[in-house]
Length: 422
Image (cartoon, rainbow, N blue to C red; front, side, top):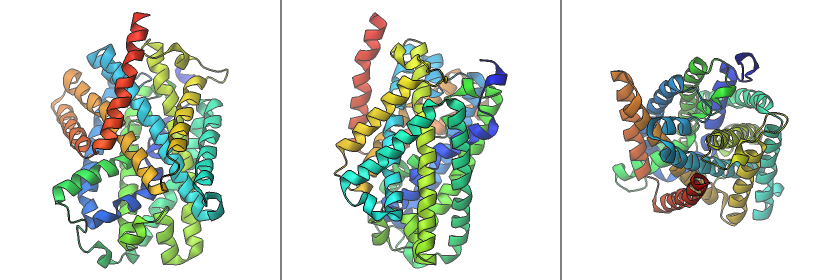
């Protein structure tokens, strides 16, 4: 593919990073973090520092290996084919789990706007699946169309989110931050648990590295977009989520399916709540669109190398990897349907932890790849910090999500050996 035909420039690549990071997490995390109160600031601090270290490391890797596939390419080039397969498989699992989680979050925003549409679990699941397959349709039209939608939705959600965080900061009630750690658990345990949850809001920092061959001047553009997008999304997310914790009582937040919208409604009336719910819906559509794009680009790169079935490498006449898009969205659909009887918050939390657990293997592999094959003292120190952060976050995921993640990764090994035999 020649440079002139590459559909993603710096702003589209940055929007892919920001749009993939700012999705459901920013708007729903206050509900899952509410039991920990102000102690979540410890987790946010660790997560933001770790995310920036990962962003710097992935930027370096993208300059060295500007190929489609991102974390998969980095692991394969540094360690060989089998580690590359395990990273590709794990990362792909995290993607369609993320699609399911964001579809659930979209349902929460629609419920705040039109309660009757989500009055029953079946209706709620249906709303999420409509949004999911709408984004699948856009991606089937091609990478350029998906990039345009990503840029539009990113602008429509980042600007209102920053305005909300800055304005609402003046209405925070400090009493909602007391006690500092209402959970009663040791602060070390709280930090581990909140890092595992807040990391969900940072996942996507590597997004621009995945479709690298579709990015103009990939070595330079991908590196800049990765660091800039992570910084923008990180600041906006931490500001908004921490502000919401100071606007409503913890018990109200914990039961809310749209905590940011509820906080806006409490401050400025129902109209403001509806507006924030609409912003959340747009945000979720943008994140769904971005993750759907990534969920097909990564297996396409692995399939070209023969470590995933060749069907993933096939493109339709619009240049979209249609098979990967359809399979990823079908698996996300199964995850939503099989868990639709859980509450929205419980389903969201389960999907988040499962997706995060599956993403940490690519993060570990990326940091280790630069330590193994990279150069420069400062870069290696950043990679060491990113590796330590990923290991720490893995410890806070919890047994259920880790077992599910490990089981899904092991389930992929027969596919690898069958392909190698062929």
